[in-house]
Image 1: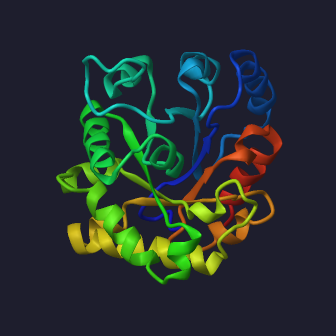
Image 2: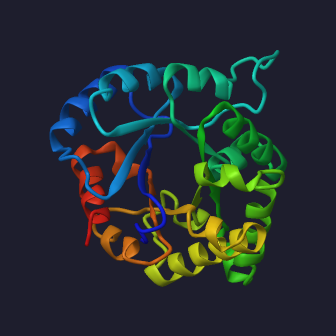
Image 3: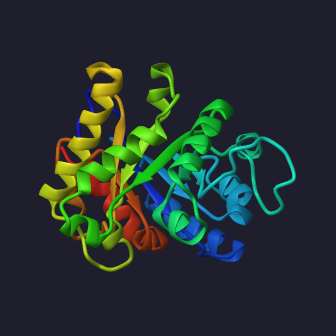
Length: 257
């Protein structure tokens, strides 16, 4: 982490978990644990049906609320979809875009990811853009080729002045929900590589301002080491974000000196 130039962000991704009742129970258990995190911003990305409740439950705390996806159009005949403007209007601050599960199960492509990134920024949301490789791609030695392509596609047409609102999350697909985790050196290598790609496109000043998270089975046991890397500026947390004590442990790890 490098707090001199950019924010440290610990974001939870609940995926398709927690009912409204369970969201209220989580807030009741989690809020007393929050001691005004000194160094990091805390974000909870929750299912659409829980967004307004989460915003209300955490309104007096330092927790920002995010959505897990959005459409790239503001309005239209897109049954079942939610626009960035709808999210912004109810108080959502962040939105996850291009998560590997969205790419795998819902046919999201690098083209639609780019459209969503630009739509989210236009609406005033901060996109958390997910990039990552499969185990097969890593073993083939094409990790950075693939990551470079994903990053460049996601940022196509995004002006430099919008980049302070952009967050990247490196999520190796082989480490999501598997219990496997990239080593701190592997995470640093890719996060540094992402920053290099941004620097080549926008220059050093912009590159050092962009928060780059690590996702992929970050937990209380490995968070401190991962977050000690200079280009790992936070985490996008799956399973551990569903448990108040574990999520708080990761936040505390981000508050290391």
